[in-house]
Length: 288
Ligand code: NDP
Image (tube, rainbow, N blue to C red; front, side):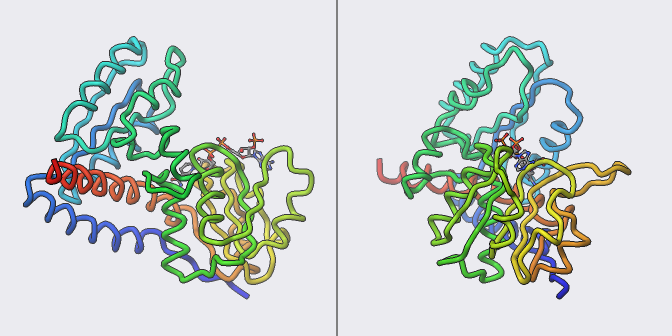
């Protein structure tokens, strides 16, 4: 069997078109979605991510605000900006690009963002709401994965799902989202004794580790759906995932490529959260 690719670029374009339409309606009602992005330091990868987010906003008809600070900025200055943006009713989403320089306590910064504007879905309040199955802002990467599974009509009820990685931004929320849709979820991590034992019995494998090509075809059950969140560089400096695409695609039924798989969906879901926040703000205003 040779797996079919799940095309993240095509799905992303479709979802962004829908979001642009929603944004146009909100703008006509005086609530143009607005995302504020804070970038600290000169990390080139972070600068590219921020640029892509700003461009994504503009193409979808959102307003975007960008605040850049030198790497040695005092944390208080950034916290004061967050407080100002929290209080600004025209701003619907606030995002602080990670990683932050070492003088920062990242948790403190992320928790300073109002949960109502936490469009990255990293705030403990939003994570708690997700755990309880209540309305919240979902972290963008795992939510993008859920959209990909939904677009392919993958049966999640009763499915065996294995998530490799337990970070707060990908692995843990991914596992919760799959569980909430009826999958039986196993979470693997660096202490897992026999990773292949788990992956080989999974109908759905989500790899979110950060180790190039570590999941090989012989670790995958024939016909499984393989979602590769990893973004790594291979020995030739080429972008690659956590999954060894060449061997895995010979065993899986569906697979996400890297690049062009999960990656494009992450910013799309950030835009989705920002539109949702603008919608909620407008509804709250009309009730008051
Ligand atoms: P983290 O480094 O925070 O987490 C990695 C996880 O992998 C940890 O839970 C770790 O376990 C686990 N792990 C490490 N080694 C092994 C191993 N040998 N076997 C099993 N598990 C292992 O990474 P993130 O969750 O932030 O990101 C994961 C990957 O996804 C990275 O490549 C990142 O670049 C990519 N990414 C891609 C995004 C996209 O938009 N496509 C967005 C976000 C991330 P332990 O907890 O025990 O240390």
